[in-house]
Image (cartoon, rainbow, N blue to C red):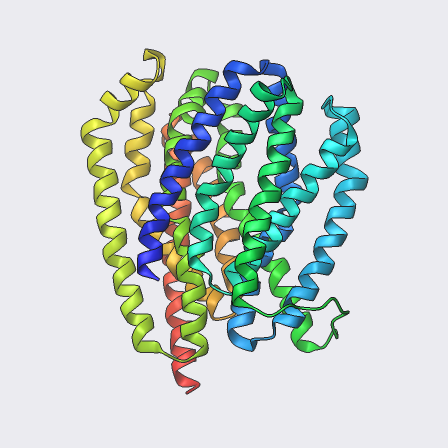
Length: 413
């Protein structure tokens, strides 16, 4: 698992570079208004299909505990079909007639199918812990997206937003085909049948919904911070965060925090199911060392080189973003350790506790911001301090919850 974990960081870094290359090339070839509509459509599809992504943790944990792939997959298939039909009925007309995405309906329908299939198979290979395929998909999807876009634009002379949707459709379908072939090697064919809605099935559904809300709550933190900046600070200060600090911090999360949920969560689920507590302790110690090394690196680079790096990559008006980045870097260790603790809590089946921790983080962000803004300082840094305070509070609460969960697991032996 550790080998795939470390290689996953490299694959993610390569994916970020390819994605950034795609954005730069498309920005130079496609009209800005069309490109904006494309990315808006993809964002809306991604948000509306969030419930499918939220199933991932629940599927991983439930399969480790029950080994009942038939029930898990058939329930997920049913939810996927319902969600896709809702998107077809409500979201596609909204994009077509309200947002003004000027493409034929089949582009939008095929995009939904492609993204849904990609999520479906990625959840399946995560459930079976096919780590090698997870890493390959991380880099394969952006490479195919860029390749198909250039192919459509230059070879077939498909200009405008159509070339972007064609690239998205073909890349997601080919990635889905790759995952399907990998899945066949690791699991038997699961027939379509209506699951029995017994106690275990209902619990799986409940945990999946809770996991979806918990996953969404983590995303909401950043959007609340952005809303505070929009309402209380200048566009220049908002730009420092949106253009520089937030993307860099998000890339750090993608590189060093997301692998915990991709690789450590499935491993923890299996270890908990097998009652291997000594190996769980060893895994925790490894994560703590990893968190310290990564965080020390981030803090050092931010303190010593952030001003020079930002000055070399961005115009002079973004220079103040380095101060935000320095504040964020000091608290990065709490994000990593909290991610592990929440992964452990979810791996034990305590999804409601994980949701409570995330919601507490959202509430803490709001309370801390208003306290600092009205009683301490009205600087833009008040938003950053509120954001990192929410992560610290989540870390503290998740620490005690995971200790309690571990104690309960050991006492059940």
